[in-house]
Amino acid sequence: MDLTVIEKLLKLISESELNEVSIEEGNLKVKVKKYADPVPAPVEQVYYAAPAAGAAPAAAPAPAATAPVAADKSAEASAAGKGETIKSPIVGTFYAAPSPQDPDFVKAGDVVKKGDVLCIVEAMKIMNEIESEVSGKIVKVLVSNAQPVEFDQPLFIIEPN
Image (cartoon, rainbow, N blue to C red; front, top):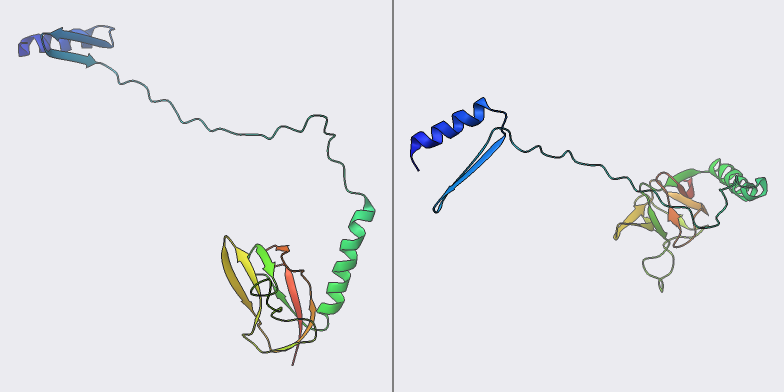
């Protein structure tokens, strides 16, 4: 194919309303496009969980269901008045002992020093030892073994020396 033929092809496509021209001559193929193909915009997919068949809309919890929580909070507040609260630095699962067959790190009434391990909080398969920030006596353990804990949730109350 001659270069002048390709030049004429380019001039033809630029002056016309054609967007694309393809020519084959033997084993030579020429394809000319005036405009590139549009690239589709990414589509954000949102998934919603369908409600279970026959499920009623969620109702507000009964006041009786919140009463035990309020009692626990008041117990924590009264115990916190007696000492310093050690809180969870991360979200995870609380473990009172290094393994199920071992004794708990601490229990109410134990005396601890600053830096002593109080418990483990597992987060994403990493065991994080939670150490005492003060020296003193454990007044109360506020979390049960293997219970999920939130960030900044009170774990222990320690009465400083």
